[in-house]
Image 1 (tube, rainbow, N blue to C red):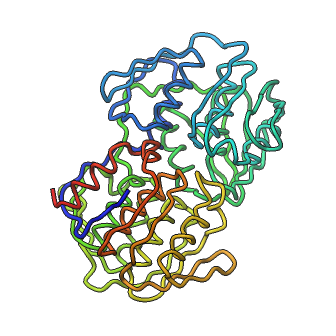
Image 2: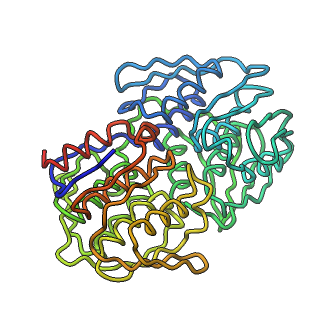
Length: 414
């Protein structure tokens, strides 16, 4: 499939955040009364979480972009949960499932089957639960009872399992003391805490230790999913490279980590403007090299590689060691693309340095069934007279089914 674009202009309404949707779905399931969630979209990860809750016997009704969630009045004995390819769904339901079933298995598909899940497993075991697994891989079989309420959790591999732990702990009777060490992707965990507080969760924080009583009653009631900074990131990079777009539906003060892209685009030279809740990003007059650390927003890496190629000069991206255990090995995937484009790069320790030329040749590229890689390759077409070839685009359904349609409309200036 050949992808071509020369200019990137128009208006865009940000799709709902799947990260926010999944958090709200889980908190609605834990809530003591019915909850209504607005602005829900049919991305694969959202639908997988919805299906998993139905497998746990929750009553859910999807009407257009609205989901009604009823509380579960009983606890299941044994349940098998299929979470699709949602990493966040896996790492949270591995914990939250204990609220709904005495014994449960959790399995997935695609890249989740090839990835190890030691941080989740180790934390579950630290609670005192019994875990059966396939040398760190799925499926997980979880049973037993929680014995430990004082934990030190390692967040160096990411924050998703920490989010799952706090959702579970909020519902389990006991005096909790949880210390979180070496936390990466910290803004996502703080976002989980914010949604928990929205539902009535109360805690005290001293240094890195959280103190709270469990078995708190959560009441989510009505909630609206906010616009997704992760989904629009590629579009914003496209405008910074060549064009100007206006995006509505985003929160300027959002806790989403990928909002940090704006600082990177400013360093690149793009013009950023907020007016009446609409974000405008306009093409850089001078495409500068940039330096950034992606430890808190690793999902930006593929499209930041494209931005680095668009720069005239050197860009440095720190925090690349966490990229191997995603939907694909994103570091290897983007290095393969750089080699196909004959762009000089160097990897040293936890950093990649890229010497941008401001343009790219045509190349035949692989998405590795990774939605972030596919989005990045679309933006790479803005740097090439003949566009880029990609082997498949079905992976976009995971997070943003309408991405390619929006790409085509913006590349035509609609």
